[in-house]
Structures are given as structure tokens and as C-alpha cells.
Amino acid sequence: MVGPGASTGARIRALREERGMSLSALAAAAGIGKATLSELEAGRRNPTLDTVYAVAGPLGVPLVALVAEAGDSDALSDDALTAVRLHLLTEPGRTTEVYLVRVRPGAERSSPAHATGAVEQLVVLSGEGRLTYGTPGSEQVVALVPGTHVTWPADVPHAYACTSTEELSAVDVIVTPG
Image 1 (tube, rainbow, N blue to C red):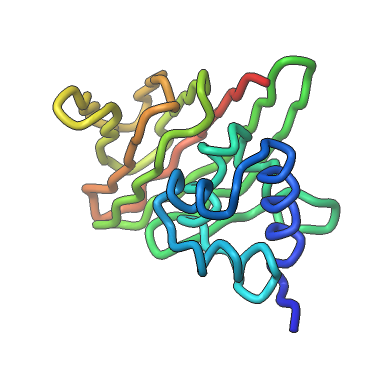
Image 2 (cartoon, rainbow, N blue to C red; image 1 turned 90 degrees about the horizontal axis):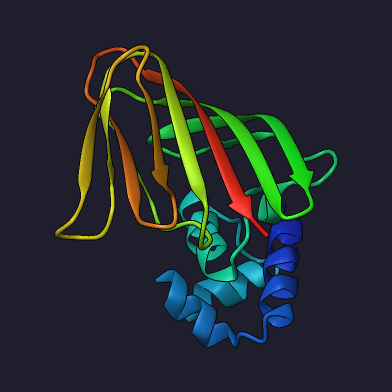
């Protein structure tokens, strides 16, 4: 039986094999179970946003490399947020993804480090919250209010939280080299 996440699983497997990574090595680097990764690659498990984020970094690719395909939905969602892809620009040496991100009131979305050299920018449209990024012990915290524009190295763990009763809406731009 092959599920709707089969194309994402196939892309993950192809990228892992291109990089000469074993299933065990990618699972360990992504912090997910080997069985989970195996089921995902085989198309027997639907990918969650957490899992796709977790494997994109160790594979050194932007999120869109794992989920984008003609006819696929341009929206990614989980319990904390919805991200709608507004634009994708692939150029020699870099990929730029532009998303409209909405974080639900009281929710927090943690993201593992993206590929080495990735940079992220956030422009807050409405709502309030906070952005935390960096490695434990050297984390930076930025208050998010309408009009805030922040740029940070996205190749470190980071998290968005909505602290208001209104959802936090922002434009998120991710530039990944490679």
C-alpha cells in the first residue's frame, strides 16, 4: 500500500542515496526513528511537517525540495501553524522560498536547523509573538509585533510562538545556498 506522501518519501530516499547516507545515519541526524524514516521512504507513512523539516536540514536541501511537485498543494500545516508558499525562485547557487505563515494563538512551532548557510527573514503582518533562534546557551529572543523585520541564520534551531489572542501572520523568506 502506498499513501499520498509517497512522492515526498521517494524524494527523501533519492536525496539520501545521492549523498551516500545510510537510513540509520539520516534518521540519527534528523532525530527521528529509523522505522519512521523507512516507512516514509516506502510511501507507507504520510510525512508530517515536523518530519520533513527534520530531514531537510541533514540532507542540505530547502523544504520545498522534499514537498514541491506539480499539482501538490502549496500549503503546509500542523497543529501550530499553516504556511502557504507564495513564491519559489530557483537560481544557480541558491533557492528562495517565500511563505505566508500563520501561527495559531498560544502555539509554538519549533524548527530544526535548515541546510548550512540558510538565512531566514520574517516580516510580521499581524499578531504578536516571539522568535527564538540559536544553539542552547546562546539563543537570541526577538519580540514580534506588526512591522517587525528580522533576519537570522536559519542553519540553527529556531522557533516561532504566538503570544496574542490573534494569530501571528508573517511573510517568511528562506534563502538556501546550493
